[in-house]
Image 1 (cartoon, rainbow, N blue to C red):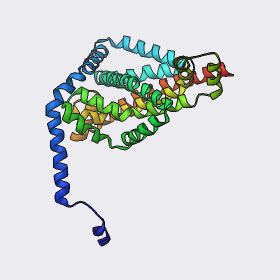
Image 2: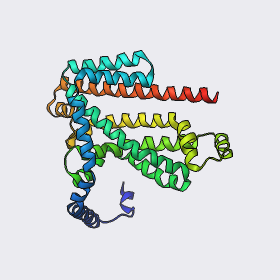
Image 3: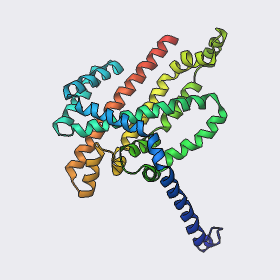
Length: 295
């Protein structure tokens, strides 16, 4: 391995100095602007708190009825509805209801934020090859960066708490909805767009009435993947104060509580299956509707 020594590299002292300068500058930035940044994210904190209160204060039978109604509307499949209700009943039976509601509220908020940012970004990418070539490398970094790394700058800027956890989850989970929104719009048949042009549709009308409806099944697949990635981040986000099913799993890891870890881990899996089946079924319904319309 002596040949490695000949490879050009910075000296140890230079690297230490470079790291020290970057760390000092980032700390100075957080001290100077941390309060302003916290203020910017205050609406997100309020949204999260209100969502969590709603889930926790609503009687469990009403929650079950609402989730069953959503599952039926999305899937029109009684098996999915019954499976969703039974999964939630088992979660409640094993005394994990409150943590599950906290997790569901966090995933809901993260998904709403990811959709609000991701779909417009995907639309911008679909309209410009230059924008696509600029954003794609950023998405590549976001998807390959170890999830723990997201926690470092967020915690340094905003401290420990729910909002930093939500931001870290959104950064980790948002790439699929951006990529698949871009892909879905680009996959719209050129002949359909030409027909819309022939009828004198404006760019906005084409997007609203043609491209978005036809791309919706693909966009739904992106939302599905975003939800799954957000759930995968739950345990890691619990390290910085995000409440929910992740915290008991983290305690189980630290204290070697086997059953606590297994039960709460299975609860996360159950919630993931519910979200996955319902969103996939809705996407399939949209796909069938599109095939009927264009058949």
